[in-house]
Length: 191
Image (cartoon, rainbow, N blue to C red; front, side, top):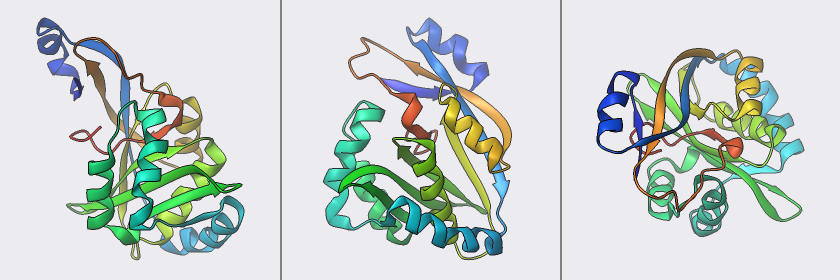
């Protein structure tokens, strides 16, 4: 069992037998759609990024499980059905190389899950996704701190670090998380 714990709750979860895996960083920024729109076309051409189709969820879930460590097909399907216009996939040589999903939360958009083989593909996915958001909005996301390329990308894209939580696990770690490919978690409530 895994969870995202706010720092003040970590001692409680430790007493219950949970162990820390890594810090999960929180970022936010405002988006200027004019700039995002200009870069979207470049990202689509360079990264092989396109709108995800509902019948691709099984393939996306298989790709996702390599990084997340478990099959999230039901969660990914639900997110795609609720926000089909904000779900994108990247391919290289006919193979999935990343995907990104976004959803409206209160007065902002949550970016994630966002999984990618490399930071170049991650950036292309991000630019296309932001270009689809429409009007000016605030973006929020969570990212595993061990993803050094992701943290660098957040700096490049002018995101502000707003806080963190701690990813914790209870029980045997059967499914390893490969944090280097996780650019955005589904949300503190989803992982």
